[in-house]
Image (cartoon, rainbow, N blue to C red; front, side, top):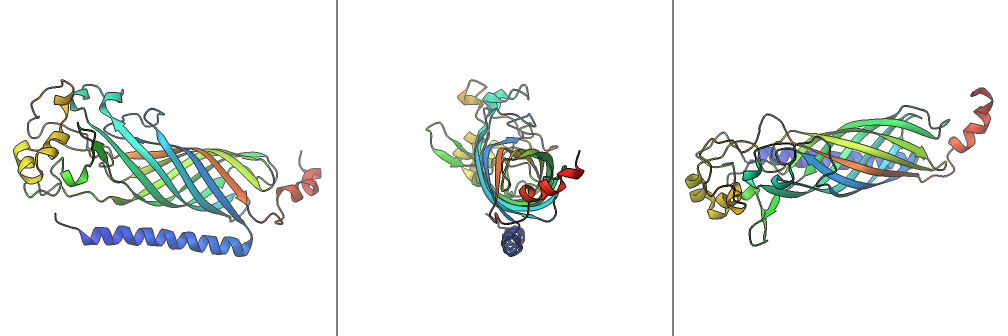
Length: 296
């Protein structure tokens, strides 16, 4: 299969840049004594051709993350972290798109992400016990969609070129990269449990620049061409309607398989815990009594 070293080089550099920025953030945070250790636990999900709703708990999978954050001011926080989660989609459970059950497609993928973001608290937590907040930034993530065949074996989908990616007969369909950029953004509500401990409920969306998170995007390619290039397994997993009585005939070349008009999304929702490691820092617990006379 033809390789694209320029693209891989770019994505590898992006991961290295974010990693270095994370280490830099950690260094300055520790030296400035404004460092927080962050933990995220919740669920991951996606929106795409096999899951039509932008946000739903259906088919959600577990997610967990570790990170660090740095107080730039009382309201602005620089945060970085690593998140691990799983996403999944299945035509049998897709309640949004109608008339596509005959495809019988499904996928799962582990998503690993490095992100760097700026967070803004609407209220000053030096005076308040809770505040809404929002964040936005940049991320590099890795995915690798797979399914299980009729025998229950795990099969990764990218090498099968199910929509003709990388085949000479379809030069406009390039293989998709498994490591890409994303734009993370979201909102939440955080609570001050103690002077050093914050707990937040958060929803974070990821704007992607690929439609192949689920390995579904465009139209069916010719089955004979696909068979000759990638074998019977590729043809069998590009269209699985024969497994559920949707029809044993492989769709004609050009028939709609997915919708390339809209890119895929994934998102993390859950609980975010942030703990200030330097308990001697002058913060909410010290400042509030002195300022209480002027706050009404």
